[in-house]
Length: 260
Length: 361
Ligand SMILES: Nc1ncnc2c1ncn2[C@@H]1O[C@H](COP(=O)(O)OP(=O)(O)OP(=O)(O)O)[C@@H](O)[C@H]1O
Ligand SMILES: [Mg+2]
Image 1 (cartoon, each protein chain N blue to C red):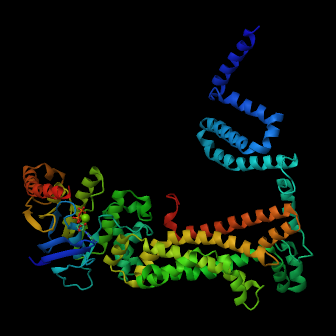
Image 2 (tube, rainbow over the protein chains, first blue to last red):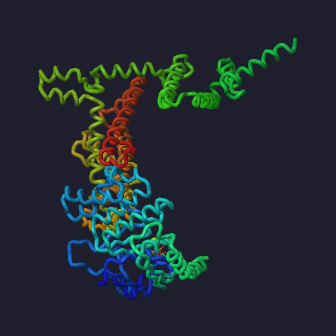
Image 3 (cartoon, each protein chain N blue to C red):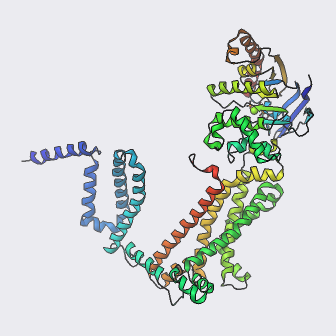
């Protein structure tokens, strides 16, 4: 399998009033084409920072992070589903979802056709003329996901996309995400703080340490696909989440002790 | 003997409680207030303590109306709100009318609303031969003038109108000031260097009362008494307000929208057109609203000082000749102009920002 994302000894430091603050350091990660990788780690360990660098919204201060470009130069490298949705309040659902295509100069009829396909997939057909202020949080995040998928990027980057949603909506969207991913088989880097979510979705779970953020350990998730809610009831699932939690617990305790 | 009044009082108090469900003390309190209000004592105390009486009366009124509200069927609640919103000012006007016709208020300085209404009507239909002006330019003469003098005649009618004079000064000045204000504000919001160079200067001019530079403008323009300086002072007032709030609007844009725009490949122009401009619009419009209000203040002040037509002139002229009902009528016209201009701006705002409409719209 070809490598799609390569991070070698990545380092990111922020200048602050009392010197440099190291967000991530000696960060190594390789993601294969078509792989679904979940990153979990204590709050403030640098998950978002890494994702922003990957998205090209920020730069490393050392080492290297890059996405290996695919054969088609017109296909965008990556798109982000933001932690705070970042759906444009001034555009309708349809125009939000078609935004990436509009920026690439694709004619209206064509971009609406492609956008509608994804709007249907995330179940918002009835709402395509609505503005985000008329939608619930879960619906806004569906718009954000559809906006990224319509742009058909080589890599999909998701930063706690379901973090702000209630438990039921979350579960529904997790399943929807899985269905969509199993269809598209895109390379995905998915940040979450829920271990269950990580194990449920991912091919591989990467655990990050805090201060400075590095990769602590990795777990391969061999649960068979397609997965659904019943997967969560299997002993294999319980064993994996248990193991991930074991590995993460020290980190969380340490991070909390540092903050205290 | 002594028990009789007590017996009579008790059932009446009980009836008060049962009948309307008002708090027991409220009815006697209102009755007491009415007695006090109508008594001679009240009339003498009026001079000194009218504010206290007005306050007490207002509180009583609010309490009574609050008791009525839950009894109004849900269906009529909207109507009820409108009746309150219209009824209360009407009540105040009626009281004003009563106070100034009965002589409690000096009718010379506070003419009754009925007189003001008459004055407003007179101003509308008559032509002031001395000043060679009319309030709205006698539109009923338009067909006649068009036949006799052509469009020049119609323009002459417009030129004699106070409302037209004020409205055109505000409109021209506002557009001439707000347009560069938005542009400069955008540039200041987007470019740090320009912002650092201009911010302090702009803030200094911002706090300067714009009417203070009117004399300078009169020196600058070839005709100091013409329309030039008047329009310019309105434009300058609008400019600084709009520029500063536009800058604040651009700077206050949530970073996550800019990042989303970049992540989806927007180039510089697309970024401006699809992200920065719409994201800043709400604040830009609140700046425009402020600027419009200020423009009206400034133009009235300028017309006080130096104008031979315009609503400000009308107020000031009627103060000089001591025709107070007409002075008040002119004030009413200023209020109406303010409402008209604000409504137009709100209409544009809803047009430009459809996403800010109510969910059903
Ligand atoms: N622009 C910045 N300037 C200074 N420090 C920053 C900046 N951005 C992030 N940091 C710091 O870097 C660290 C990592 O932040 P990051 O947002 O990546 O954490 P996270 O793992 O995504 O946390 P969470 O799970 O709460 O979202 C934090 O300690 C944060 O304070
Ligand atoms: Mg984060």
